[in-house]
Length: 328
Image (cartoon, rainbow, N blue to C red; front, top):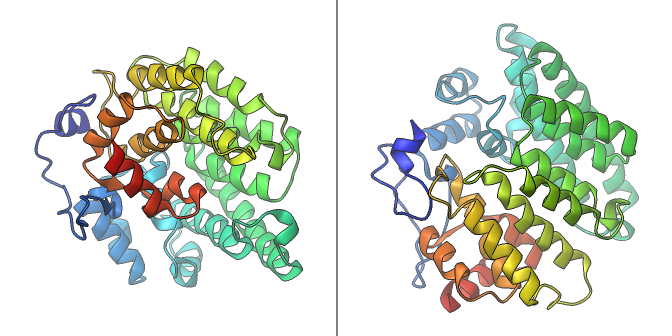
């Protein structure tokens, strides 16, 4: 269905009946994508914001929350969900797995909000305590959701995040990675979590993440969004580096161009719900690499649609997006 609605590759998509009207477009043409640009997702977010479990369940009908990371992410990032979702977990036996998944995902995000994005040495003892307390709740709920619905992949992706935060070690996290990839060997979000896991700041070795990403790309069919793993691996390399120009090499530019052509710019690529996140990953990576040609095609396809992640890595995401959008 989404293929017909959104079209493929870099071509402009046909009219989408669920497209959310763009609001807040700035003079430079950019705007922050909200509710994945979809009226149905907006209805879901508004129901969750109001704490209306019955409306949330009704709004979830078009989506597969056990596989749709983006839709689950909209709920996980919504402040206040933690205040009412526990009642749904306890009272709605029929939909307990869904309520557990939402609550577990929210507690992971809520935990990281308490920890903040600061380096470990700058996190206070009280922040660590709250962080681990929330992640502990998340782990219990996500495991139960996974047991109730063995086909779901989203609990395992979130368990990778909590496992990284709780420093559970390689053996535990590799088991979780395997569990996720058994359910979908080409799941992008799982691969992105592992790219983060392999960074030196999380006890990985230099070069590990990029090697993992390149291996994944080699197994990726043309037009598949998993190609974004290369873009994110290079962004992570930039985060770890002490040099702001570390990606500005002909070799990295060429690798990013090839990955974009293989994935998001390939005619077989389908613009599914949340496709703007894929394009923003490449927009940032290509911009950091100083690439001047493919980056134009990526920004043109975005038509100003800005997603906070991964631009948050740059400190002032909106400003950086606007600057590179203008140059492109």
